[in-house]
Image (cartoon, rainbow, N blue to C red; front, top):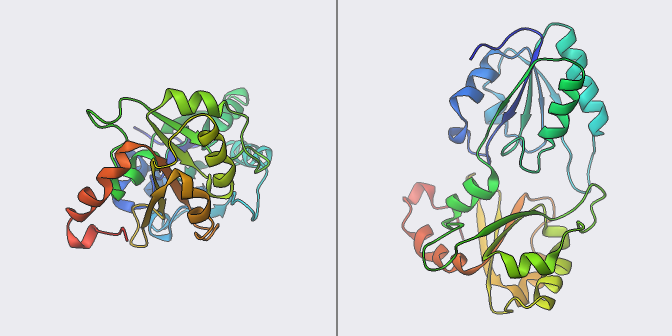
Amino acid sequence: MTFEMGSVWLVGAGPGDPGLLTLHAARALAQADVVLHDALVSPEILALAPQARLEAVGKRAGGDQVPQLRINERLISLARDGLRVVRLKGGDPLVFGRGGEEALALAAASVAFRIIPGISAGLGGTASAGIPVTHRGLAHSVAFVTGHDTTGALPDVDWAALARGADVLVLYMALRQVDAIAERLLAAGRDPAEQVAFVSEATTPRQHVVVTTLGDAAHVGGTIPKHLPTLIVIGPVVALQPLLAACQPEGERHAA
């Protein structure tokens, strides 16, 4: 794939470990003139674009926010200046990454773009923690759910339907709302003894996994620093985590 001048590549950086980048992502970074990156993209990944100008445009819950409209306008302006632009996002650009919004803005402005998928944290982070999101005999369905809306409040989703309809729930950016989410799932009939895993800083050397129950999830979630990127996994597959994490090579065993 040729990275043309005056175009934008919407690139997934994966869940954190630089080794989980795709070849297309690495090649894009090596050729980029400018990289607009999320807050969670690691310095090790940004170092793969040594010649590029780096611009931080991340959004952190409870922290600095760069308005999405400003990011869209910046991408269009840089491309019209004839630059090769990478919009680098943690995970996958189209999984809770607003990549679709940016692609629509680029299309409306007649700016050429490509979407380079990345490994979503809901897949890469759970695998790194030793949690299969599906498993024969345990879980035949999985739902990926955002933990907050654009204002930081609980999203307007049908929690009762999710509680009944998916064996496994993988929650992104839900740490601040875990008490409300647990309350709704319990009210909809999920078992308070069902296992829950909190996976913080997944795939990095700082990865930390805490396993509890849905009934205690609000209390345990309150002990985890809110600034840490944390996945929450609910379902029977969490029971496999101690066995699968223990069987990883010592250098890759991050869970506690």
